[in-house]
Structure formats: C-alpha cells, structure tokens
Image (tube, rainbow, N blue to C red; front, side, top):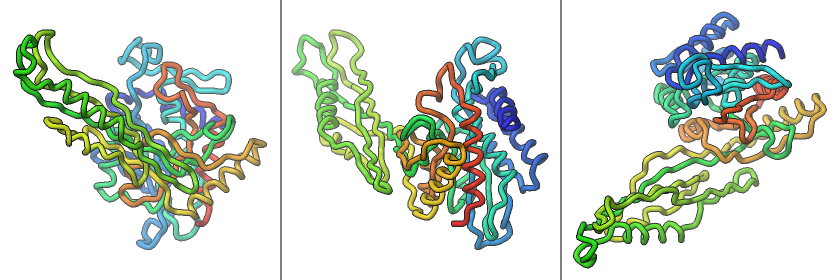
Length: 371
C-alpha cells in the first residue's frame, strides 16, 4: 500500500492541466523500469503498454485504462497560488489531497501496479493505457482508437466508489453521454417602436425552447439497470440594445444521452428561422459482454469480502468517460475506480489510500480472471 500511495503522490505532484508531457514521461519511465512490457508513446502523448499474448492475433485483449490530464488547479492546489507552479500534495487522515488525486491519477497508479503484478491467463494480452485530453473531449482516446487501439474489453478506472452505498467500489455497467447543442434563432432587426417591421429572434427562440420542454428525455435499460438521461436549456443570449428588435438569439441545450437513445432535438428546427447545431457529443457507454460484467462484479465482491466490506453492486455512472469512445469503437467496457461523488474537480480533491488499494486488488483480479 505504501508503494501505491507513493506512486500516487508522485503522479499528482506533476502539473498536467496545460501540458501532459511530464506526467506522461513519469508513467512511461516507470513502466519501462518496472515491467518487461512493450511500452509505446504515441504522437498525442498517450502511454500504452502491453504484455502477455502480444504475438497471438487471436488473443483476448483486456486493457486497464486511465488518463493523466487534469482540469486547471485551484489557487490552493499549486505552489504559485494559481495555475502556475508545482502542484501541492498532502497526505493526511488516510487520504491523498491534490489536483488529480481522485480524477484520476490515483487510479492510474493502481492500474500501473496491477498491470505490473498481474499474470494474465494463457491467450490474453493485457494492456495498460493512460490517455491525454480526457478532460477536453477525449482527444487522446480518439487518437489512440484511430491509430488502432482496439482491445476486446476495457476496464476504465474512473470513479465508481460510494455509488450504491458508502464504503464500496461498485462496477458501472453503463454511463451517460453528453450532447451540447445550440439553437440559433434568426430574425430581422427593426426599431423597437415598430416591432411589426421586424422578426423577433428572441420570440422564435422562445418557441424553440417550448419544443425542447416538450421532448422526452432519453431512457435505456442495461443489465436491468435503468439509465435515464436529461434535457435542459442552460443559457440564452439575444439582442444587443434595448430599442432594437433582435435579429439573432442563441440557446444552449445540455442533454445527457443514454445508450441507444437521444432526444429528438431536430424538431426545434420546425420553428421558422431556427437552426440546430451540435457543439459536442460525448458518447454514452453500455457493456454488452455478460461474462465480463459478471466476472468483474465477482472479483469486486471477493475483494470487498476479504476486506470485510459490504458487497458492491452494478451501477450506472452519470458522467461521460473515455469508455464512451472505446465502446463506440467496439470495445466492451466497464467503469470501476476510486473517485467518490463530489471529489473530482474540487479545490479539496482527494482520494482514500485504502480505496486505491481496493481498486488495485480489483484490477489485478480482473486481469487474471479467465472469461
């Protein structure tokens, strides 16, 4: 456990919100020094290592996946009191505090140790991957996929702790995606004293908002677990001054998508002068491999039982992860990791050392479990 905590602290201390290179260097150097795996660093900065049946074209491929980029730190999280300077890392009360501790360098460290220690069964290639650019739309994952990264199965080490109940690390069999859209309403400007001489873009945008309010949120069921998305208008901007009929109004829509279903936002274009533009579309994930999901839950429950903890459950994660991009490309994914709800992206971000050890045990166990 000490090695895991020390490695976590090392990774957390390395700034990686603007440039992930130094964190990638540390991960790559550790893998080359501590394992006999084939280690690669691609053009995007992703670090990928493989061991086991690497020369067998029919090998079953399982990957432990994380990311080493982080969101910008708060002032208290750097020695420079802002975005500059080294990251501040503290260990107290059984937790490691610092930007990226929970999301998700602690879990990356657990994956690294599990990758080193695991002895995959015959006929399995075991991979480890730490991507860049997860926080800005999965840039690293998409680059790796385009370059041929295509494991049969992947365990993505994003947070799933304390989902079903306190003190357990659950197995997420699905997660929501996020589609960010803009409705652009066009009108015709006129003097506000003669509103009938123009076409009010805000009125048209209001009609489009009414269409959005009438749409059903997307829904799906994965392994008996209900996944319900959401749909909300979150911003609206139109007009330039008080005495001019506005000729343009923009409305931002946040949609949480689910596997196999999206809201019919194109219906808003039925309003005259309204166009619908998709700004970002992070895909949802649903595991389609019963054996993988069953085995992962069995391993997680065995680990919890050994530690005297309550049994974990299958859960649905509300946030999009790189598992969505992998699943879209054909990889069966699960999410299991140390981050707890409310920890990521905060100025008091932290991760429990015992939880990291629990995750290490789960990752090693899944890596060695025949499927």
